[in-house]
Length: 222
Image (cartoon, rainbow, N blue to C red):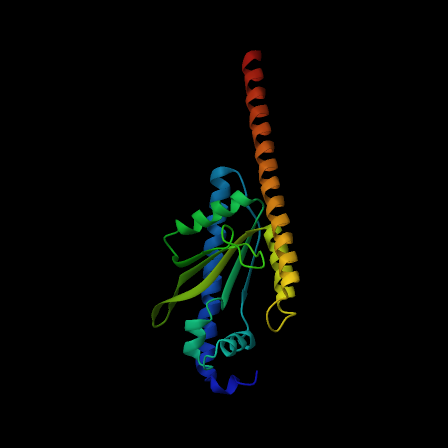
């Protein structure tokens, strides 16, 4: 970390404390929201949830790429994904359920949305991003700390991992033939998500119909 000495260590420690506090707060709140949803609807739309705080080296590299000075203020103002939570859902329509669940929360404030599902990136990357503010209560009062929440399907998560690895192999622009192939793969992923969502809907309809039939048979036996 070549430029770390331009950041005051005490300020950095204070900032990291707030980030860790915000992450724990957000994790707990999301966990409660998701479990409450499961309890009400007898259905779990989330496969797993991952979280991290971006390391300072990565934050500094991001500022360098964007030609910002290496300061605490610029980390706060220009590195919007210092706190990151990824929610991976089973099916495509589950993503919408979780997005709405977070939007309806009174605890966190959404200040930016990026819908890469309906508007994928050039490589075909798909996900739903929410930039939120999380209240953190300290001795001196409450502060709103920014965090990024990504919501996607398992298929999208698989593709995003490969997309990330491929992009970092190129220092400059990705060659056009590789970009086109990535876009084709992303379309295959999207088609798979659509098929799995329809399959899940068919399974649910079958089970609901069978349950109704069983109830009718039981009533006729009484």
